[in-house]
Length: 421
Image 1 (tube, one colour):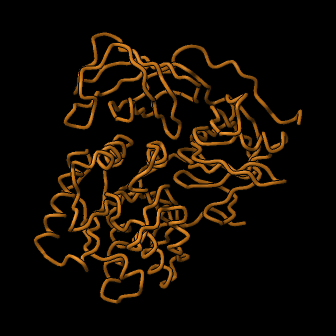
Image 2 (spheres, rainbow, N blue to C red; image 1 turned 180 degrees about the vertical axis):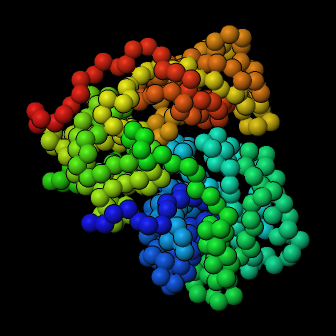
Image 3 (spheres, helix red, strand yellow; image 1 turned 135 degrees about the horizontal axis):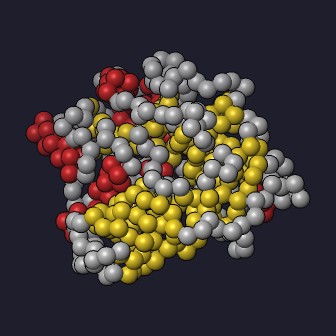
């Protein structure tokens, strides 16, 4: 077992239109750096496992993938975000962890502002506090027309600026991921330039290791005979092996039909970060937390996306909240008509996504305005105030806001300490 790595962590999300070579770029970055002593190379087939393989050899991934890339000064948690997916939450949930954006475009397609899903992801990233970005113009080996490459760069900068990120300040790297992955020495320098930009141009946000622990769960796993593993990111505070923690929220695992609302109190049995056993997880790190499951397989499967891991008695479950939300205009991809005073939608807070009844407090919400909303969730989630909230309706992003305060008393649920199992 080792302590936390000396290199500070940084979470970078690779975003771009579909079929732009994001997965090839992630693998090329890991391979080139691995040859220089920077971690382990990631196999392309393993990273794209479960994707749709096309006749031309391209792979269209359908799920977000995580890999660790070790640069000269950092350990980068690289999020390879799928260009297309059937459920938006599979993109929005991991994006809530991003601290920087890697926008991948190509000269042939550029950065189209008409790609509503791409625009939505960039707006959501900016809403979560991301300001810095890097632009990688991929496939310059296929389209070597300098005017097309310049146009792709201009479009990418304009799109970042329009979505609230610093497009004018973003460094631009022109390269070709697939040839670099295959070992072409002409394009390897572009991968090294990207790694240097991550080291020199991206700044890690301020973190508070002494605050009470708060972490959101993206996924749960079951290890037979050992317990449940919660894949989480430490947002604030720190976690050591053996520390008591509260795991609370609503489980939406397909095998759990009863007792969805949970409040578990367990001790962290072990911690792992990308295969490495660690004794302490610090803010910004992605970790797997092994939790004992005295209730057997049913207890283990209750750990799933949307739960919150926190220090004991520091946060409670609530169904209601008051949020200050900016309603997006139709030109920003928002709702094409004026909203009703009361409507049904979805509220995404961190990695949790719940159906919600939404009511305007005051005048009827209009596009472009900031308005207070009362949101009643179908199932409770852990709330303390200050969380970022995303409001969606019928598959469309319609509002971005901040939770002002939870409403109503905490959800009355007994704490399961596991002693009865």
